[in-house]
Image 1 (tube, rainbow, N blue to C red):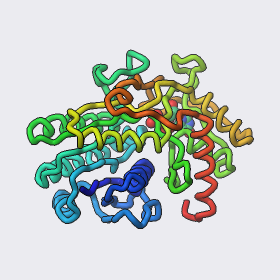
Image 2: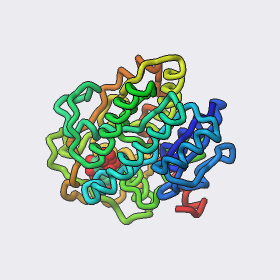
Image 3: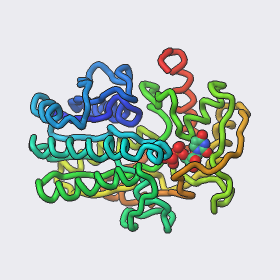
Length: 329
Ligand code: UDP
């Protein structure tokens, strides 16, 4: 009964590894360390340094470790990056997922949890966004993930592979016990960037677009705390193990904050009034994405523990400070 976590040395994956180990599960991580860090993993997790797109390696790992479930985090995740390098994204997020799913089918693995994204909705016409809205991703990132959702649906039906697709909204914060966090040195995500600006690690920051059709003109996003998200995965695993049908669930809190509101919270919590410049829109950014978030609670019995932007920002700031003392960033 080992759980294979791809991308387990990365940001969300490392929180999942901790959540699994805290719950007494056995864990094997496959990570090529392209953006993850070996030191983000506790010694109880076995790390195989390799590529989740290497089908033969994946079959071997599944057989050797007695893998019965997979949580697939390994991916490239930056929307503008995907606009510049679409084929790289289709390789990382679609082609490699196909190899992993094929290996899972061959190895007889029955349970698969997939990290999808709110980007599959594109520019949603309804806010909050329900799971059954027609899907129309506007970025190669969103499309690369949607294709994997489709592969899972088809392979799941054909081969008896049960899956839970979790569509993440904006993930932020860090492990409340300070064991892991967002460690990518050139991270582009809003709360990380703002935390770095507050700590003087960058001279300031930019707001990408203030002319969106939103109350203050900046984009609205639904920020979910990363250990709450990991907990949704644990609940998804129990759900599948107890015979739950394959399903697709939004992971968010159902409330939107604007970029300007987030920056205000970071300034307030850090006590630092760092410089902020208003800049052009970034390619591929939808104006507003907020989850309709009741289905994940109803189907998985998930109850968030950290639905508080101040707390999320405080965790991000603490982790950013601890990265400096670790001397690894
Ligand atoms: N954003 C910003 N400045 C930054 C980073 C992000 O204005 O330095 C904005 C970005 O345009 C988007 C929101 O913050 O509207 C969230 O972006 P992020 O990259 O964190 O996540 P995404 O929603 O793209 O997955």
